[in-house]
Length: 177
Image 1: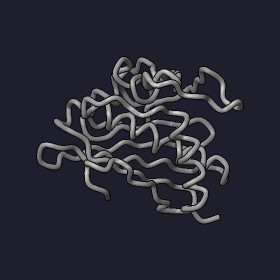
Image 2: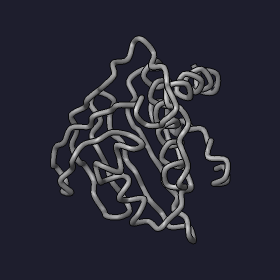
Image 3: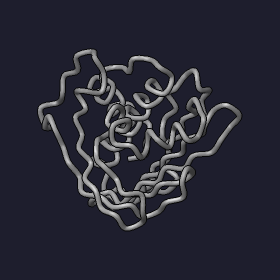
Image 4: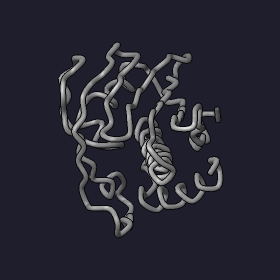
């Protein structure tokens, strides 16, 4: 894993359809947990959506990726301005683990581990159905976690869509065909 200063660690496949990405973020763990679970904080790096913190509860994520930074960001034509996903909490161990059902592409887990004054975030996205989805999801998580790292460090995040487009090409070269 890269040092916290670089914030550009690429995801790896731990199985053919499972992506794992890690980031070392400024702590404490309760602060990072809030960025995962509170809609107002989560919308600043990923997607809005109120969650009832109990296993089995359903919620809707709403993405507006162009709003994740103040710098202009040109969205690819194939993506809408806004995207929603119905989901449900599958695992919950505050403030260490959150598991979420993720539409047709399996499940996502976020695990937090204190590392001194920092927090190691491990994201695992399971059961990605095909290579095009794997590439889109890898670039998406990478970019969203870069935005989270910037937000938790008190910095302005990079433009989302430009980073996502570049990362999608990089993941196409990095991940096995």
